[in-house]
Length: 432
Image (cartoon, rainbow, N blue to C red; front, side, top):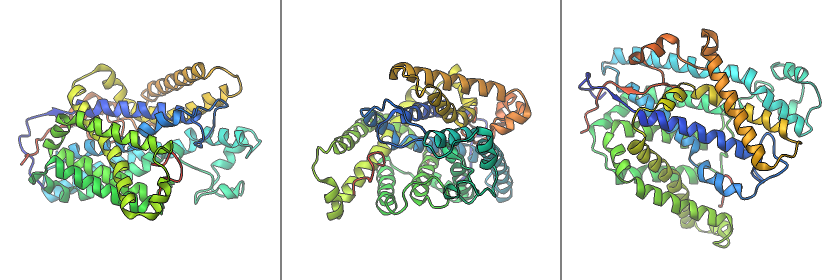
């Protein structure tokens, strides 16, 4: 493992804190949009669907989850660079990180599945006419692993589901892999990797994943059979680690942020133009010509990476400073993430038949969601049990941030106490 140097030097990555908060904010807006957008299925749909919203939501749906995995990977890599390169010390520290990761991701996941997600499932099945029963009757069947109720909707664990919380088990698995592979990956710190070769390698790898796995393994979020998602998001995790191990790459992303933004807008424009059938029978060409499939793959992948590169570049340039609102919200990211979709579904269900104009309804749902998330965060901080259930750090950890070793999405501070020596057309219109 690469030897860390200059341990007295401390760098705080304020930009990662800010970008994490912004990324989860985008996620909340996106899920409210899912209630209104025309054609795309969701747990509950508005009686006033908006066709124009599809184009707006496609702006983020290719990279919004990748951004969360990217930031999580960068935070984790920062923490791993602190570890002594001696094998026994690394194994001990890796074990501690894995234990912390398990506690702060898997406990909230289980709590969320049993408590937070249940109202989403009840409302979805009630609205769609699947069930006609009280919530209590539904819940007793929902948590019963041996239930015979609605057998056609069972998974291997019965009716229990994680819905939007799928990010937590995926992040847990990828984090464990990254920790175990880090002694090998750390050797990258010895290399001089240029931005052009790095961009080409990451883009080509993603194109290969897109071409080989996207249609064969469509996204399921079930963890066991979701190979396209696994390949895509773990590659994102690897890229995040490399950016931290090669600090000059992030500096290059900052310098080229406007270029990345222009490329991203151009690729997004091509995707939108195709969705409106401006290029003719693209689907036929995708089937008939391999070179055309590769070209479309690069358009989709460049759209993905260019947005991430632009976000990192602008974030480093303008957000790399302490901000009070970021400091507060960064600590509550996980409770906000856990609660937001259930609050959106409950609010939408409550307003479903009232007939408010879309604008007023959107504002009410957004306010209800944000207030509910804020109250959840404030209540969750009050005692040790709720801190554990919502993945928050212990009070002693919050008091002494220099000992911060957490690596969950809600990590309140990101430090590096070491300096590394730098040496066919989509089947649906939403699935790009």
